[in-house]
Image (tube, rainbow, N blue to C red):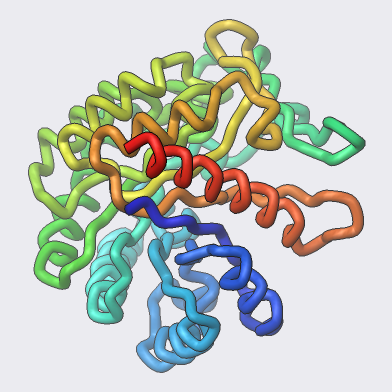
Length: 329
């Protein structure tokens, strides 16, 4: 059975009533970044006592951590080939092992994002108003594509080798620890931004990752919005990677527009985008996906800075989708 999940940030731990609210509306699991665990921001390495404390709070609300996601800041040296890369990789491996020890089903590993290189001009991302005035993200990449590489940027092949190094180190540890590692892919999903390369932006890139590091613990977070933005067929991707058992986690967001067609896209509330999200759920169901569908980019609706109303809207819609699938079956 597909599980319903949502992203929470560290602030949720100080609001036990909000965690109970998630359980009350039917959320099964939560997605966190590793900075939810005290001490991680300072060192990039998890501390057992911090993980234990957070697990106790989440479990106390009747929830479980489904995916614990590393952050870009603590893999930059690896991707850039800078001093300290070996120590960063050692910490990443140790974090994967500890997450497995605590029974987290998925450990998210970030790929290199061009923005990590820095020096981008403003204007790619802006906030615009949608239905009833809610604010959502609009991305215009027309001026950011097909630029020459800046001095000092890593090459595509350097990024590939460093990405594979991460997975060759972490996948065996994850397998032994009883967890799995999942790469999200680039967002925005393009080969470069302002000339800075990216490597995990299309289905072919994931095929290469899985073929070069063949492990049952090596898979993907299938981000519906990102995959649609790329211009590739979301449903073909679900069939391809879901059929291989490589979809470990799903980010369930809808967008308008694709980069090949319009040079950008808008992230919108789930019923307003180009995709029929019920058809997406059905496609996941048809390939036997039983992980979590996760609302990862939480939007703010009127009078609700914490995102509770948006999550409740999405979760109610998802319950309707799952009930319709069950009735059809």
